[in-house]
Image (cartoon, rainbow over all chains, first blue to last red; front, side, top):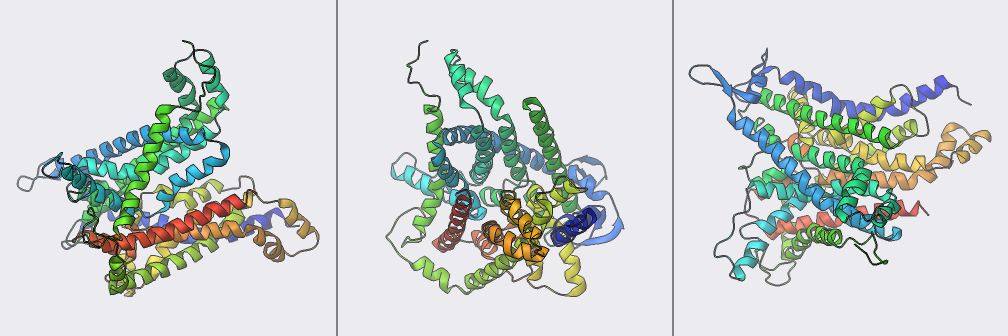
Length: 298
Length: 269
């Protein structure tokens, strides 16, 4: 028999390798980003090791080149706004499609549910780049939709769908949809369907059953799904880069731009911390609402 | 309003319709991508007959060969490292109550799932840039370490799930029969844990193989994995060669995920 102290020591010994790698290559470097955001930008990229808060000002403001006055940076603000707007749109559309899909799967016979969930998860585990690329091939000017419409004679020239906000939203919806279905399905599978039947027996309308019985019961799953879609959408880099083609920049792309040759590394660092902060706020809201949900039902 | 007695809450026609559309939407682009990788022409919308030519072109492309080898080396190494440390971490954190610092440990392990990839990518870029300048080393170990870190939660989850479902009595019995801790682990715990370890290793392999953002930021000049090579190609004219590479990658991922699914089903029986 081992003593408590030994168990404790063994536990930390076993945890050391994992924690070391995670500290070195995931959590630790975040501190470097914080430090860099307070340095001065070098003339040709990189940094000069003198303290400066310029980067943090540049996140939302810009200094006029001639008279040194500060004003809001329209370019940055419009990218912030687009990131939030498109992420919200993605989340809403993913919910509108994901909720009925989860309901459909949860109401299949038990032995068939796993198969339907596998169908949802397989695309998720395949390459995000390839899936974005697949959507692009559908809506490109020379893509499937435009070719078919032109062959049918419905349009004379291709409809420009790529490089629009629609394209970015569609791409993000497509790649992040499984993240919505998964948690909603998980709470729906545990839901007691006799409650739904009882509501119908008491002459509740379909809409009322949905709003008053089903939605409150699957709320934790719906909140989890929304966060799981919103957070990666906000930090998306690959999908807006391909679907937006440099015209519909989101936060991830704005950050990347700061690390090219002769760009502004401290600003890139400050923008990264800003993105991280927004994500953390979203996650805290999620944890809070999950805790409330538990006390409600438990 | 009277309803027929046979009314079934499980049949919501509207929901079923949306669900069917959802599955079609999910698979249509992927299926088209695969189909057009076999197209004889250069178009990705007009079918001109069956051909292997884009696979041949990809196979004979030296850049693609190099990228494939690098991708496989990184994915195997990262998967090996992540799975080994995840087994230890799972043994340390499963089947015990809350211990001092357990919240912090879970936050650390799951942290790669929560922090936006672009932020981690920037952080690693800055750190490795400093190391590259001071040591001059620009090899593949940066990529292996970075990939290992974000693969850890994916390796950890199935191993932990498997451990939680295991019978503690067997280990207790082995220990009572004077088995040394290492013997008990090797002879009793490990054989039962294999499916979880294999699942974890496969998930990490797939996750590493698919990574674009962190690889794009961490890689040194001239290093390309398949995804970063493809991202570079998208700037130029798109040929079905990219479709062919995509199809090959899809095949690997789907095979792994289906194997993972079957493994996780087998443990329920």
